Length: 463
Ligand SMILES: *Cc1c(COP(=O)(O)O)cnc(C)c1O
Image (tube, rainbow, N blue to C red; front, side, top):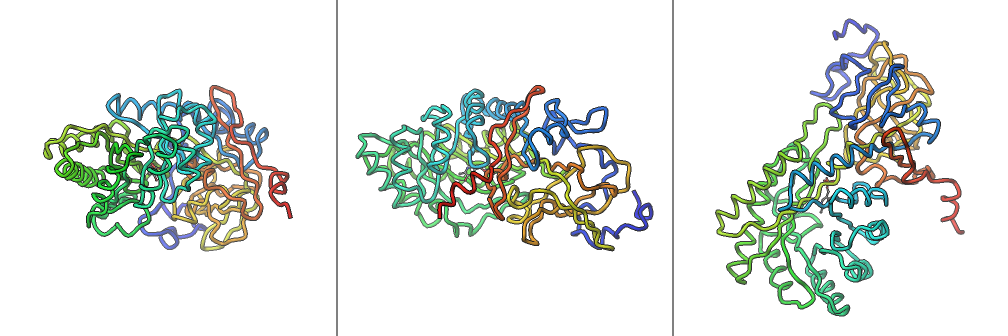
């Protein structure tokens, strides 16, 4: 579509970041399957549907803003990951991406394991019936209470993150008369985010024990001496929203290097390695994530090759996708409240949520797509910024978007790929009431996390 078709519109190249959406999409009504969950489509009236339910009815029943989670899609992604890695590997869903009791049950039924990183996540997992031996506890500052609860419950592994924690977990386990299975989290000097990874210097962070300089080897040395611990392996997590496996390749090379050092020094081959999560998803159609089977093949090949070179038996592999499972399965539904045209710049479209239900744009400059879903439109594309209702100019949901120029108050917008790190990072900023999560499947919708109420807010305010 040429610029001259919209003489009144802005010159996109002047206001958009270089290389980004330099032209409006040709069809604003299309719901690109690369960014929408599997059952999302439009019905004959042009209203978007998920799991067979139309979003106008969903908005009436559940209100806005709200997250709608496509249960079939969630389960299909769990199965894709489990099948891709097969019986020789374990898939741990990273609960911090989004956790609720329903999600725990789905994970359990689909044969996945679960990572938790706090007492609250652990309580949710156990309450919903996840067997403790399929739970891993993470965190750089687990409290003694958290460790005690995890050891008492019998979690399958605790991932140790510091010298102090090695001793702390060992003491607690001994006191409880247990031997806790542990992995040692190492930093491999690789940090990967989105399309790039950097293979030097990223030891300067709070997680893990550095391979470089020997801290990781020293941690293993100390942990092996303690009766309360059974050291089962080495853990590495290199970043987030990663699109290729080259960073994992370097990480696997270095982790296997440590396994070899351990074998040479202690005469033991640790039986497990965990390469973490961080696999990317499509937030916009420009993102091109790998499929689970491609990732499984690449990681399996890398580990096998590195172990062969080191003369080690291939350890049991585990991975920890969070975003890649739940991220694509949900969208946030908002109602447009006001629109404000800034001549020559863009139109600000204000919705009834914002940074309280999606902090990622403000926090990470995350990119999202957005569509008008309560109807179709043949109006010209309008360069827009979708913003929230909070008292903060950085309260942006979608920084750059094209929406139809006839967009009006009352229209429903949906932002896809908000399943991960949106509800789980939601806040009560401005005393916003955190939105519900509604699971949709086969023409039925049910609330799995209810909307907060003013009573919820006031109940905590005891002063
Ligand atoms: C956050 C985290 C994950 C999951 O990351 P995603 O980007 O959601 O896949 C996995 N492992 C560890 C240790 C993490 O901290």
